[in-house]
Length: 362
Image (cartoon, rainbow, N blue to C red; front, top):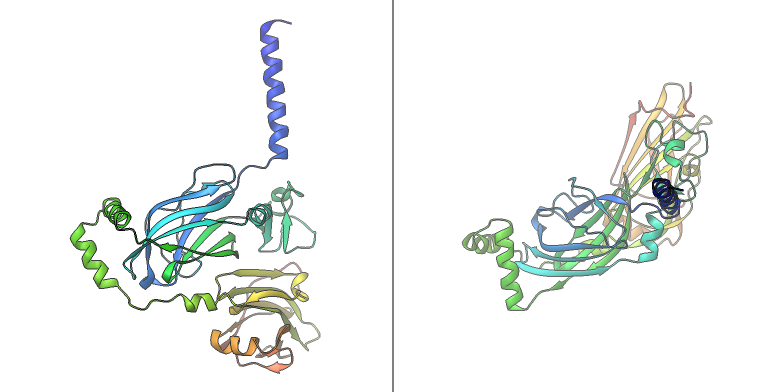
């Protein structure tokens, strides 16, 4: 065998081994990184940051300050790669005129499990199989072709979201398209070393082109005394419950429930599991949005909004419960119950819907 054949043979063998290795070891996840805050009064700005990844791939936060609202910055960024297992961030909290250091270690096994999941967000147009809350992409490596051929019905991890609250409170979520799950809460330490404060202040001013005089002026202007993260800590309170939507209309079909929670989480329930969701430990809902039909040209969208204080007072006295929404047979209104006890929602609305589903009335 001449040397060219040997080289070709070895190259082919290496490529085959590499392909087999890639099949066994999935590629590192890629995702958008967001830095959110509670509101615009509590803006924070990273000065030094790095995301720690399992694969030792360099990753970082986007350039600039926090934005949006709790759990959503409303901004995109160059995608980062690598399974995120921690963060090392030094940032400036404008409303406190203080620098903080977050050194967080994420639960590795939990993260590794989540990056193997793809959550259902819509019915599949390319598969007749029943939808599941999520699938394991390692068990179904062809899921994109199978379920997402025409549109995305299952979403892998798409976002890593940081939420910054006063006094160093930080919450981290994982996003799967519109679905969002809290990974954990972490505590940043206030930096008190004068030389370190001086160094970070100078770096902040250089990085963001803010002169020293303006920096001190803004520090006084935006300072808010007696800041507390209590409100957002309370939002993380969880109860064991599940939604249950029903109607005495004999043709009633429920298709989807989309819920946004006060703690920054979001989830989507689809048929068939939307019909009888399991009781889970969940935060108080901010808004629930649901779709149903009772016949041809009888498609509706309902929305119910919750006041956190009222809901918390009611939820904590019930134990495990069903949040029952009972739609009138004529589809003109609905009532909300905790188990069988009436509950006063903050607001309820019903609209005619143009949305169609696989099992819609023809």
